[in-house]
Length: 343
Ligand SMILES: Cc1cc2nc3c(=O)[nH]c(=O)nc-3n(C[C@H](O)[C@H](O)[C@H](O)COP(=O)(O)O)c2cc1C
Image 1 (cartoon, rainbow, N blue to C red):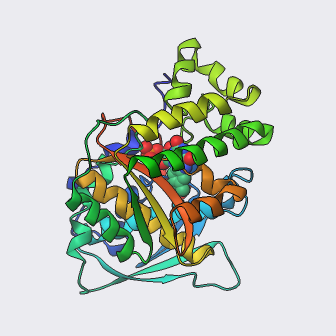
Image 2 (image 1 turned 30 degrees about the horizontal axis):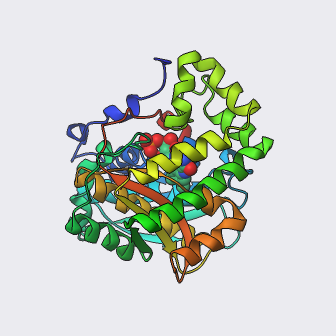
């Protein structure tokens, strides 16, 4: 393992928040929590501009993944997740706010403008999620074989509703098998494409110290035994689709709960809402001692997305597929230094 990776972002300490600081300084402190949000391939495709009592959130399309995410759908979802963390942190630090999504018709990279409302009221339900920001981590390992409690399930579904999205729970064995088959088909389709492999390999490259993914999945983890520098070139060179499909099948079989997040439409505002729903669900899960990882492949492969929608009988467009359960605490992945993402 490379020990120089940037994980210091995770040592942020709420005790260092200065209640007497200016609002601008408080916003900058809260942004330390925003950047701990999940993002596809850990690209962290966001940029924040702080100006007095306002923060503008922009998509950083230079960090796009054109093969796996050709329309920047997951990129905007990731930015939505970062905005949700910011909302939680501001609420925790007693700063109420108003958000204008997509304030500029001229610049589609401007995703939201947030303005602090002096003497406004903070949402106590968001404050309750604050501790989970540091606990949340993507856990790609197997989960404990025990069902998710009905009350936790209810809270996860509610997390979606509160952010304007649908969260559908999949628990029964037959439905999970059906989804595992779609995930496997998607794995094979993705790994067959050398452009997909090359893009993925470049984001698990050992020289990426401030982003990228530490390992691909339990299936690929074994490859690490041969030496980290090799992993990237193995992924780039070989079609691992069959092995990946088998590994994901095992994971799905051992996961007590799959969640699909769906939005009414399939455009940038819907993706942005789905990102906030995702992070709300992930923080809710972490508060309940649960963890999650992603099985988005059938949504990423256009030909399979409609089949997933039909299998789950969704009204809206599926945006994310995750597995939820109880698992061992995984290591945090690196983040870019704050001065690279906040101006
Ligand atoms: C929109 C989105 C899509 C993602 N897709 C995948 C995926 O297909 N496979 C995967 O292993 N992780 C996926 N992730 C998880 C990221 O790789 C992970 O968030 C990132 O590496 C940072 O790690 P962390 O979540 O532990 O902080 C996704 C995350 C987001 C927000």
